[in-house]
Length: 236
Image (cartoon, rainbow, N blue to C red; front, side, top):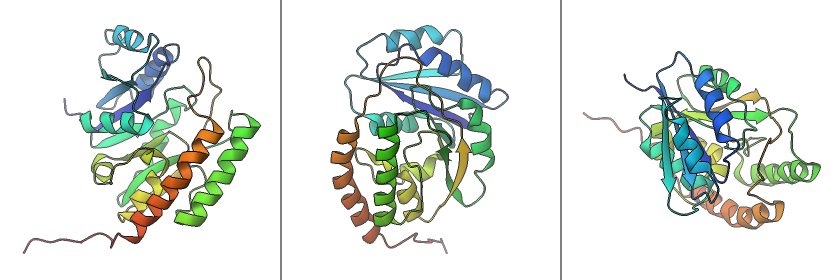
């Protein structure tokens, strides 16, 4: 069977979340020719074992594992590179993204649209994290002009070839909207549900995000300015 949709989920120390999340993704994509790729990014708990045990229950499940922790962006990239589907759906591995929203994102992936990004409604995060995200989105939008209000939402649907055409760097997952637009694609937005984390702990801190974001913003702005737009190549 030809795979049309590949769901890619990077995870790090999420042993208690991967089972329920994988089952929800399978239910959301039932009836579609799909695969579900979990990328274990060097977990030190029982995440890899939990995923391996799920393979007998969920035939569409594939499990990749990094030998060491390389970060969320590398996890997404490894999953997309291994994917067989032309359409990719990404979700965070903490279970806060709701797989039930996936069909609405796929429906919005119209011709000319390279990516559909979820926009979290009623975020189930701490007040400090919501404030930091709001300020960060304002700064990023002012510098990059991408018009996005929630680049931190891990629930996205996009064309595999559009992603693989992007210049890769660590933390690229925070700037996918601006870079997809840079390559001439439209980006659509869909309001999505956001749920509380049930188990485990976040791998990010507000300060940690701020420190890396400043350098990354300058780098992405440079990439925007050095790009001359789609070539529009035709063979004669």
